Length: 124
Image 1 (cartoon, helix red, strand yellow):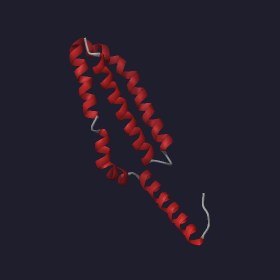
Image 2 (spheres, one colour):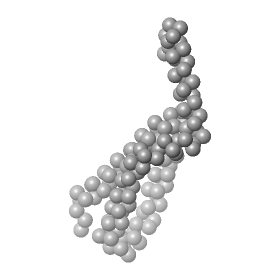
Image 3 (cartoon, one colour):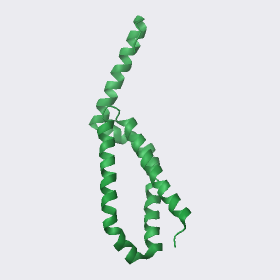
Image 4 (cartoon, helix red, strand yellow):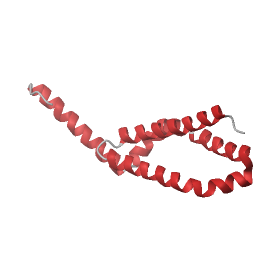
């Protein structure tokens, strides 16, 4: 039987990975964040609905330790996701047309605010 604390750590880890990617996408695609986050949630729901279809066969073939180890290994591999996004996120955003558009809009907004500050106009 699998230790309940092990299960808790595995699923808590997967949840933290999900949250870190969720926050990264929300911060990277500010204007389009609702669409990006909806897509991410849709993929999570699809995986959650498909996973039970093969879980019984996986546990029957691999046993409790093997199937638990497989999902723990997957969680361990996914644990690198936040660090990969930290290292390679700027390159990925540089290739994204949406991120380029958002960066330009942010630069234009900051330039307008700086100009208004020089002129002494209050901005919201």
